[in-house]
Amino acid sequence: MRLFRSNLRKLVRRPATYITFLLLVGLLALVLVAVVAGSQQSTDPDAALAARLFVTFPQAYELVLAMVLGIGGLLAVTYGAAIAGSEWTWGTLKSAVARGESRTGYTTLGYAAVSVFTALGLLAAFAIGVLASAAGAIVIGVSLDGMGDTAALGGLPEQLLRAALALAMNAALGFAIATIARSQLAGIGVGIGLYFAEGIASLFLPDVIRWFPFAASAAVTSGAASGSVTVGGEPVTTSSLDPNTAVVVVVAWLVASLAVSALWTERAEIGG
Image (cartoon, rainbow, N blue to C red; front, side, top):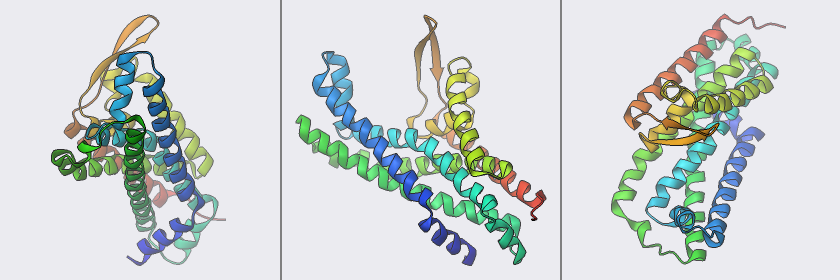
């Protein structure tokens, strides 16, 4: 617990913590502003109706959470990579090992602190997103009666826990990449590259890519969904995992990422 509390205090002072959260809230706000503006200016009735769903409760709860998870997935990877990479570039891991700390324990508790801040960022961003949606509803003139929907509110805790698990896995993946690379920049760069590579690959191998980390994390709350996009003039079907299956896959990726981080740290040469 001493080491865990120390990591929490350390992350409070890290600029990466605040920058990542501000990016998440800023991008979320931009999307919601664009949605509100689009619902008022669109000449397509179907598009305007779809845009109004983001400010119509209780549907807005699910859509805001999906946006936070979508935007936060990439940011969680970069946050985990930034924190893990700094342990190597700043020499804090070497100092901890020199004073007798367990390598595996230090790495695992360092990640645990990252996951706590990731969950706190999710909750704060979701609350801000809901308030922004409510403000947008007032601007457009949509009733807020659905905000008190009992069924929607009752399901929120489980959905938030699922989303927190997904972001924790993304952070663990970035953590593992940066640990292997021993670098913040390399960890962030590779993490971003994998994120977009998986998104592109999902257009061509949807049934395979849905088992990959980012696709699985996106499915933990949205559930199984299918649709189509056009690639080269041809429709391509996209699909996602069942939400419960996605949770199992996400847990597997999280455990694997942590195991890689711990094993790599144990075997690494820490000197100089």
